[in-house]
Image (cartoon, rainbow, N blue to C red; front, side, top):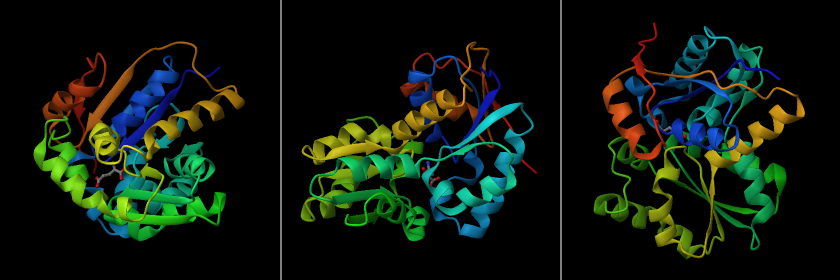
Length: 265
Ligand code: DGL
């Protein structure tokens, strides 16, 4: 057993979909979360700029007593997973491999769609990961740069016409290419899943956030690192904690944690 914190980070609220998925299956885990809201969207950053931000996020998280780091951000994982592994003496978990593995295993027609930020799609990380598990898959990748910002604006509830319109345009290629499986490759996107399901009713939608939580659980169990006592959750953001709290309250059950402002040097 190990009751130390799991350090989790993202550019904003997207990583909370990973936290939610973790706490659904590992309710005793203690979490310290950093949302780099000052630098959101990560999807528009260069790999060099992202690397600096991501390593700084890890440095901050390491000021707590951690047992693992979760890169709860498809973009950061796509561009800097190896950097995080190289600079930290802790197990590092990401969202890309677990979702890619499940998609490769479950797709019947071997046509898998991936939607993610521009930086994540440009890195080809999802395509490479899917091909590691099944090289015969045809991967249809689509950068969907407006989505994370729409989510961060709180425009993820089902009645949001602008978001639905943007989604319809972005997802048309998945209909044209007959994908049977779609990976939500950015952790902001699970908040759009009911709208996505409405547009693609026959497609198996895979949440990278949920898959990451499942992989974390298996690894903690296998290494006897699970926590047996819930102590606390700590949340930090680099700008506007009030807004973050407001959004978190919409989709996190009983989100009554304090969110503190933490500007990193
Ligand atoms: N949640 C993020 C991801 O998984 C980042 C979105 C962004 O900041 O552009 O890619």
